[in-house]
Image (cartoon, rainbow, N blue to C red; front, side, top):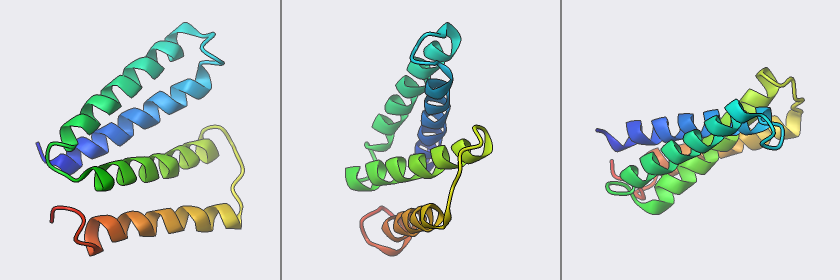
Length: 110
């Protein structure tokens, strides 16, 4: 499978796990708590597969950055958490960085 598809699936799994972490109420709710463990387990497994084909800096940087952006979006949309101009600009900078590392630079495998 294409490594970037695996990475996208890893990010999606991490987003599910992190959302469940918020819903687990300190691991006091069993169903979201199980989803946390499964979500993160699947995410780490998929990241390990991407590392077979892509450099660790690209993989981890992309995974972490898009995880931050995704979780921030989930916070705003699902949990009604506020975002201000500075936060929006920070997220834009993260996205520009991901683009630069994955598309513009020679760090990643094109």
